[in-house]
Image (cartoon, rainbow over all chains, first blue to last red):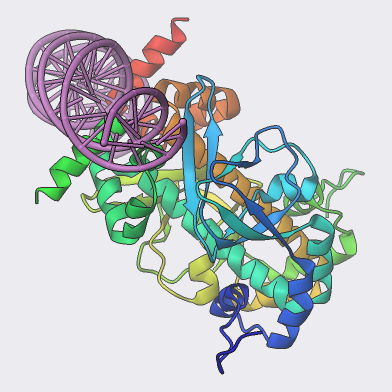
Length: 199
Length: 199
DNA sequence: ATCATTTCTTGATTTCAATCAAGATTTTTT
DNA sequence: AAAAAATCTTGATTGAAATCAAGAAATGAT
């Protein structure tokens, strides 16, 4: 309990209500289905080959999802921060090995939900199922845009987009992580920064 | 009605059953919610700025989805053929302008569903809602992989992947469409083909 | 069948990021 | 505070795709 008069809204409730009309009553039913977990900086949440056991809502910290390709190069697909979801639904739902890797980039705490709890939630909290669907639509549209950006834009443009859209990430993460995210070498990123700060 | 003894299964039913246990009875309820439409080769189904009015199941032909970036370059995100879905759910569901473009690459016929029919279907055919969710998961996983491939692989690798995964597209489409899809110039594609057929 | 248009190929040059290599700076450890 | 490790910067070289430019081949129209 808090000593202040106004109770701060739970970050998960905030997220749910931001996308869908979600009642506090439903939230009371939903929250116990999550389990709080934490991961240390650089800890792997899951690796390619693992079956993903949870879907995660990030309370604190940030994670990266990446593939490792044939020549062993890591490629970060995206970075997710607090207030967002992360996981790998195909492996999670079908209980099959994933080809994705998920790593904590800082000390992190998350809310983790198992598959059976997810099924329970979708069956028993219709508004959660609705939120879930809306979230998928958003995710799909976002991934399409990422795909469009990744293939159309030059490194300089990708960097400027990042500065514009997520400037805090540049403070938060070492440059080699940003480089893996933008798909360039750290040397190139260093040069991009030089070019783009001089303006 | 057909003169043959065995009725060929409807391509949409095939697709629904391939991902989920979907009854013929439900299909009888679902099918009337779609309207058959056709598009001529090169016709734009929707353009950036439009509100997307339908979601499409492709009966015949193929489409490409693409963005047009700041300098006016087109970038094909993906190509969808018969038996697959296409559209843009975020614009479709929220009735907001899309930033995507959808174009028929051949003369095409599709089954098109409006938003109100979609809502009806999701509310009244629970198995359709289930299929819908599963399809989203697949779509998300597929987009992630595409994103991974797009940013990790070199043009030669992308080409060989295409030859392996969708060789028929190479017959079906002119080379400049393939080039826009792989994210290279037609000249580069021509050279890639030369390099990779000699082996 | 011929002409016109579209598409594809090939060559030369330019551009830009990767790689290799070394040094500078920052952070962590002791 | 000093030493060690990690991270970032800068320079030189290499490599691969874009661009520019001209032909060749295929397709479509009359």
